[in-house]
Length: 216
Ligand code: ADP
Ligand code: AMP
Image (cartoon, rainbow, N blue to C red; front, side, top):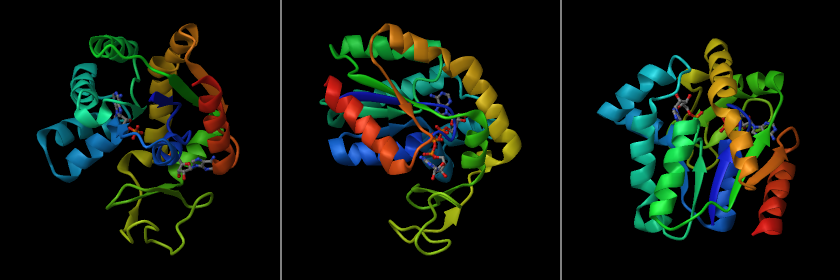
């Protein structure tokens, strides 16, 4: 199954992606996670991406596209994958179409998580992540069982550098301008599942699994 999960920053993509990949047993490809992992290791890619991420801007298309192309052509993606945070621009969506065509494959579903702007800011600013494994929490809506420690690996819980309010506001602006138009693009292709993201995490997940089950 080849899936894309999209939505504005803070909508709950990463939270739902973790549950989707567990249920459907497909690799989780998060471009944001790839950049953060590279930054942790101080690779040239990580340092280049940070210049953009810290300003709330998108990493240039050619950089992101090359990474995703390489990743989805790997053996473990042969039968499917979940793309999280990609595509984010029209050129990225076109590049994805091209690589899928080369692979003689097609997307099964594009899940769009819909959340109002004021809610997004509260979610992103209150987000906390595990420094070690990247698991996502929220100070109010999804706190870890033990304060400051990850439920999965006991790693340290931190705030992302790009989750400061002014950066989040910029990221939402960039989303509205560059990424939101892709909703119509995938609607026109008959691939879109619009999901109400302003519900309990489990309810959002139920709606996602129902939309996948119905169509695939
Ligand atoms: P994205 O990957 O779209 O940026 P995340 O999955 O990291 O979003 O979620 C953003 C924040 O909102 C996190 O702190 C997460 O715990 C919280 N969150 C996710 N889904 C919900 C929800 N349905 N209700 C309340 N909080 C949520
Ligand atoms: P995310 O973890 O999806 O919120 O992404 C964090 C940041 O990584 C974004 O604000 C961008 O700077 C960068 N990024 C992630 N995915 C992409 C993408 N597909 N295109 C451009 N930049 C991206």
